[in-house]
Length: 288
Image (tube, rainbow, N blue to C red; front, top):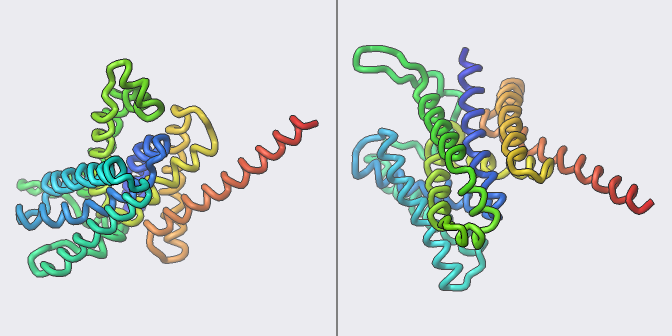
């Protein structure tokens, strides 16, 4: 039963990150997921210090505020300061992440947050952290409810506003001409990425969230040029990542989250090699 819970949570985390990461890959903004997943750390710590609670709602608010803030920071640097996007992202996430680490270490006695858990997570302990009501009813692992709600929100928003998200990702100028505000959907997407990052901290940590945002969508991007199929392939890769990652970790007695990213990266390399060989054959057949 514990294995099923761990695999399910792993799949939901990979699914949430992968679906949103697909839009980031399409926008050529994949590394902004890196920036947000690291930059939300000070927001989480400050939210805890102000509220004195580890309730998910306060963490969401803190992460959401910082997530939007880092997005604005990057845009200001690139548009007003004419700094390259990669440099702006590199500065923003390292600066804010460093502030988060300082807050964690400086106020370690007052902040009941384990920096190792935030950075790397430990999905193996999820079955033991259960949600018990005041009446004593055991509702199961808390993380399963958190990432499950995250998945529900991602699915509802993507299905309800698929056209807006797709058009603003493909062609912002055309979206503007038909009355769709690209900036609005940009911040909606960034808010979702922030929410997903903090929801996933307990499971895989901030560092590995980056891999799940980038690698499955990048792999799917190599397989198909149709975006709807790209989302399907991303979901399949997320499922393979969680199942194979769990059993690899079990066999080697290593971190489940680390094994998941290793499996995901291996799948990417295999797809890259196969697609490269296929493209070579197509070029050769056309030349003949």
